[in-house]
Amino acid sequence: MERVNGYLILDNLKVSQKIKRNTSGEILKFFSGGELYFKECPLSVLLSHLFCEQVFRSLNIPVVHFDLAKYQGKTGVVSTSYNPNHYKEIPLKTILDRYYLDVVLKHKHKSYIKNSYNLYNLEDIERALLYFYKNEKNFSEIVSSLMQQITTLFFSQFLSGDNDMHYMNLVILQGENPYVAPYFDFDHSFYLQYFSNRTVVALEKEGHDDKIKRYPIDVLKDMLPLYLDVLKEMLQVLPSKEEVLNSMEKSLGISLHPNLVRHICYDTYLNSINELVISYEKEVLKK
Image (tube, rainbow, N blue to C red; front, side):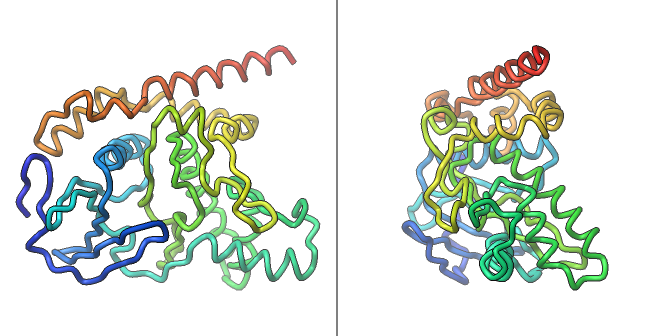
């Protein structure tokens, strides 16, 4: 494929499938030695995808490869498939819904407060996974592995302030050993306004209704008592914004003007999280 001014030109590729999006537009699927997915979006969103990919790879978090692309005059982001082996896909939503209907509603299970589950509530998700895989001989090992992967993905989402954080974006692939699909869908990450002033879509699910929303910073506060060491380890190995941008420029073969990436408030954002950690540790020492 030809690259012009940093963009891959997809015009010569044949569209094999059009996937409607819930909000607007559609995702185009191409096949060119491997499946590629193209979606039209603003430049700020495109660069956020590329920026996040670099950050998540520095944390050894599985993520698909993103690139800038154009198709028939439309500008967007193109990504590799999160399921190149075509394993059976099971969204976390399916597992949670089944547990909710079979156990919570039917038996009024007391493990759920007010008959609800929260997307970031790892205990509730573990119960649902144990129920879903209960007939597998090694169900305990399967669930343990999946929970480790899901926990890592949760932290990456909260750490980045991803405003497309919902459980349809957490997909389990039923390979020889079930595993969570690489990170494949996020928008506007590391935007300071999403971190401090805006809620995150479907961050919580209460009463089986996507209405309650919380700030990522509040969720991180809730999780610190259990996962402080994990968060501190992530913060220590994260690259600087300059290092991330250098990697992006090398990959794209162009220089990025500061105005193109000023919306990515990465350093300020991480400083806020570090301040949260320091404040929490001081409170713990007081007690």
